[in-house]
Structure formats: C-alpha cells, structure tokens
Length: 249
Image 1: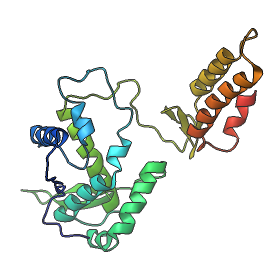
Image 2: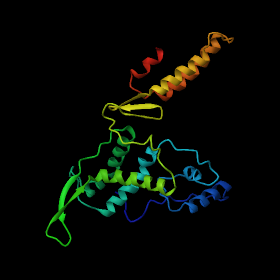
Image 3: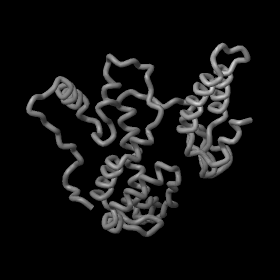
C-alpha cells in the first residue's frame, strides 16, 4: 500500500515549446478541476463542452469504474477511513499488504463479469442517548472499494448533467437465465455470445452483398463477403465456442 497522505494527482508533462493542444488541455483541466482525474480523461471532458452535440453518448461506464487508477483512488479513501472487517474477515491492513494483487483481481473480476460482492456483516453498535443498540451493516473491504469506485463515476455523471438511459439501465444477475445485452453481446450464466439483433444485422448485410443478380465477378463478391465476416468474427471472437455456428444457418 502506497503512502495515503497524498491524492492521486497526475504529474503534468511539460514541453520546451508548449503546443496549442497542450494549452487547450491545461485550460480544459482548469475548467473541470473538480472532477476525478482517474475517471475523466481529456477526451471525455471535451465531450462536455458547449460545442459538442448533446446527442452524443458513451456506451459504457464500466471501463471508468474498473480502471486501475479509479480503484486505487477508492482504495485510498477506504484506507484513510479505516473500519472493521466484513463477512470475509479481511481487514483494511490485510488488504493493504496485498494491495497490488487485490487490485488486479478486482479489475479482472469487474472486467470479465465474475465479481461477486460478499454478504454484509451485521454488527450491533450503541444507539446515542439510549441503552439500546442499532444494527450496522459492514461490507467487505474489497466491496467498499468497488462501491467507492462506482460512486466516483456516478457522482461525476450526475454533476456533469449526464443521465443513464431509463430503459437500458437495470441491475441483473448475469449468473441466471435471461441475462442482458451490451455492445452487441448477450451476457448470461457466465458466458457471452452475439445477441440476436447482431446476428440478424450480419445476415442482412450478407444478403445485401450477395443479390441474385450481381454484375461483379465471383472473386470480388467473395472478397467483399470475407471482409465483413472477418470483421464480425474478430469482434465476436470472445463468444462461447458454439455461438457463431448459427451464422452458417
């Protein structure tokens, strides 16, 4: 665990002959100085400027949540706050001694969808001004870090005036049947494959490239189709093995 007394503030890279782009970046950072440096990049901040179209959207906030810098920032805050161990018995100090490995594990689990929060440990603490006690839920240290990383992204989204799509945003258990669609994939029971709409679009594109009456040479048609198939298979290569077999149907 690194020294917790300092915030994660990136060191500015200077140049002997400052460029216009560097000046614009500095001005951008000064204007949006209140945002988390580890969550919002210059490109994202540019999208918040008045000159950018309000109709442009980001399709994912996952990469902002599970970024190593954001997880480290959340970990620093948990470290400074301290607190008791959760249901798994891991203390803040123990997490800190294995911080590098723990951060990598959290990042990978969040990225591949295998992260599972621990049950919240219930403790009873004195109620102020009374002899009674009140229940207190104590999440595991790693879960408090993930909650902090997610809260950092949500806070900036809210403060920037951005909103989540009311119909496309929901909480699901991807280990059960049903799952959810995201960026062309369908995620379900620990697996992923092209969603039905992605398959339909591919077949529609292939039909458009292979009409019954086509004046092109067969070799040109095959080359055109192969370009589309290579791009499609390249994007969906992470699907379960049997998922792409239906494309031949």
